[in-house]
Amino acid sequence: MNRTGDFPYPVKKAAYERQGGVCAFCGVKVTPPSPSSAPPRNAYSGEAHHLRPLDHGGTPTLDNCVYLCYGHHKLFHGMAPFGIDKQGGSSRTWVHVTRTDFPFWKKK
Image (tube, rainbow, N blue to C red):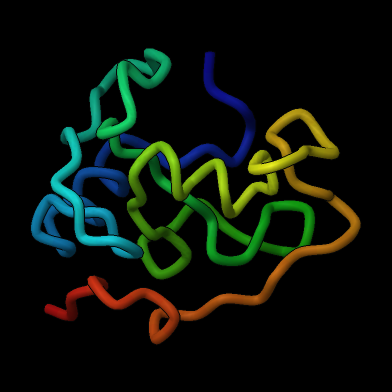
C-alpha cells in the first residue's frame, strides 16, 4: 500500500540508476526497486528516502530522493536504536541532509 507522497516507481528507478545500484550512504549493492510496494526482503533491499520529509515540505521527486539500503534507511528514520512515528522518525524534527552527506551519491 502506498502512502500519499511515496515516490512513484519511475523516480525510485531513476535514483537507483543514478547511484549505480548501491546505497548512497555505504556503497553496498542493493536490490533494484520493484513496481509493487512489497516490503523489504532483506538487509540489502534498496529503499527510497526523502531528503526533505513530506511533513516538512518534501516532494516525491528525484531531486528529493536518495536510494539507501534497508539498514541505512531505517537509521535515517531513527529506528536504530528507537523510533517515534510510524516510520521510526519524528515528524516534528528531522536531520537536514544533502547530496554531499552521501559518499556514494553519483551525479549524472
